[in-house]
Length: 338
Image (cartoon, one colour):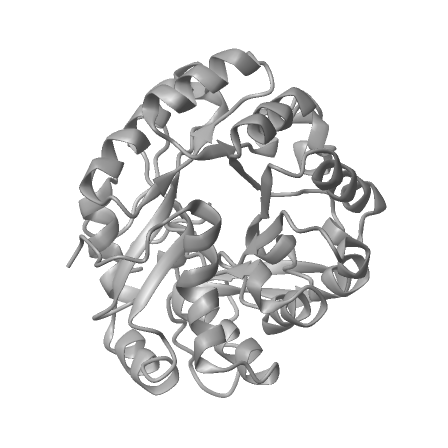
């Protein structure tokens, strides 16, 4: 996670939003991938948030990239490996924040050593709606090349299937959906557990869109497979999902706090890189470039994907709200937040 000291909204951000996004962004948004956190469990920071990030702080941050819009969300906990024994604290924090808005939802962070029945009991007790796993908890080296089973045991998927829960999965391996083992796991698992809803984060981790073009055709026909767009700045990554699987499989996500750094993801060769504000590239051209917030670059990538696929206004609204609301059982009622 890159950190900078100047990731608050600037006049450049405001001008970018007005020019690129004001006429595109719907009035109501469901953020299908965003984080809330306890500061003593993971040291993330965004402007205006000096300690824990809860519902109020989240809403404040969203007005930076969604000015004037109503935003509801699927809140995702996170902890570092060093604090893995305190995962329940992070999960309880998410549960507490749901009291602020009946249309928000929350996930439960799991580690591969957790007991499946303990997971079931605590998700139910906390009123959460599914699971979040992450490769850093896998007992392999390097974790970036871990098989999914190393950090999401099948017994967890079985519980999610029995309970009708969602699972947000950030696949790894260097080629993401271009990796045959990842594609085989996704297809086999979605078919074996049809009552579980699998959400692949970052548009299938398609930061290199060529990987999506390679793997997505083998995932056609899985009714319980979805994608969140979180922080992916490559239009073709989103466009490939829309064209191959359908726009109703895709859900917008900010990935706060990543959204409030400056820069963007950039595909190159058979991989990708991240350019941040302190990456020494912005003055290498004939003029100085002022990077905007990743959340704004990400929104523009979605605009370009929707334009390229000739989506209607109602289909754009599906990506930004309705698809997630249907998946997570959100009543399309009057929002509770301003």
